Length: 210
Image (cartoon, rainbow, N blue to C red; front, side, top):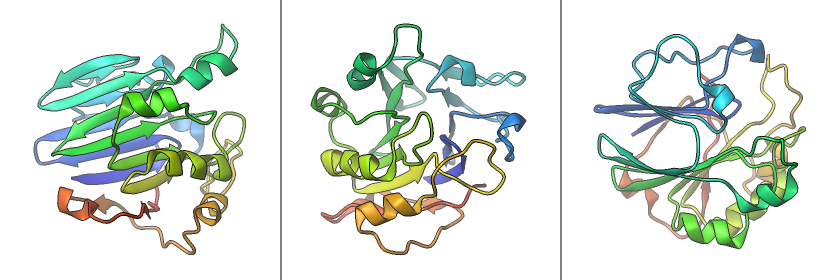
């Protein structure tokens, strides 16, 4: 599978048969938005992220269990955020996908995850996790504690400061330091197979925004 990151919490997961887009954003973010045309499955953490224009064949915008084109999807409303937020606030949905025998989690979190949620998601191979603090994301230290609790094979940070982004966020460096990862050179995209997920220690991959 090929994994790309556009900035914010927007991720694309592709193979020759499927095109999955998570959390697209518009031009108002200040960085180049993703193209939604050709998307087979669209997942959004919040209903407001559903793009106008081209409508993907299948969209998910909240908790539940779904299956489409051989992809299993589970969305959960984090119990930690349910306690922390006001009744009128929107609580982002956390997702886990199973594709090509790989379990992929996308966590748009504003507070640390509970043991109950960790148990509900089960084993995670690849974890996308917000790390940039600001007004709505985990900071680097809290994000590193989530990683250690979940123990994914690979973690890919998202939701941090990049050139052009209008939202004020921390750089990824604080997360890398908290993880003890040292200097990690960003790559344009990640090309991963099940066999790449061997090993006991979590590997950190940093992606360049598309």
